[in-house]
Amino acid sequence: LSLAQCLRAAGRIREYYQVATGATGNSLNDIELAIEAQAARRYVCDWEGAEANQSIFMDGLRRALEQDAGASIPPGMLNFMDVDETIIAEVARRYARQLAVAGGSLRQKLHKPSARNKSEKLRVGYLSTDFFAHAVGFLVRDLFACHDRARFEVYGYSLRHHADEIQARIQ
Picture 1 (cartoon, helix red, strand yellow):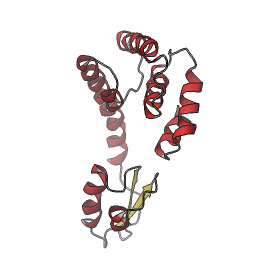
Picture 2: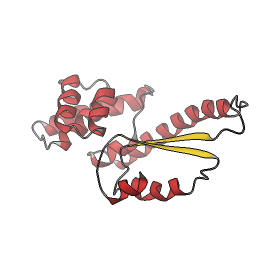
Picture 3: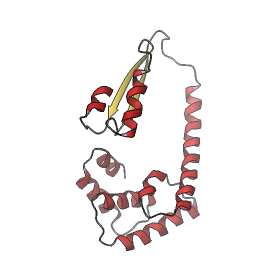
């Protein structure tokens, strides 16, 4: 799953398709991998068996929701698939709860006193595949400029090179 996601983020679509669909074969029991495989098929317009795959996929998604299997299903991936809005809403609620739990432990860690020297700049890093003419790129180019450089060292880590004027400004 992670390899498929990295390949997608890097724009290596052919390899992404091969990894995502090869890992599932005809079994869509792992719902997170099944979502990735369905997305990969749509990326490359592989419509062969789409209806059969969709039926199996939806059965797996319903099972995961009924069993509350704890799968981490990003709701955004479902928006361009043939999934009912009520199911997407339920997936979004579950995903928000998972993020809240993860955020709770992160908040606890952040409330601990810092061991760093107060005179040192705080290093802040941003990671994205969308540091170019994309909604994220338009938002962060101005965000980065707002950091007080006397107090913060700002780093951007782009997972996809897409040379355009927005990416140049962010750099």
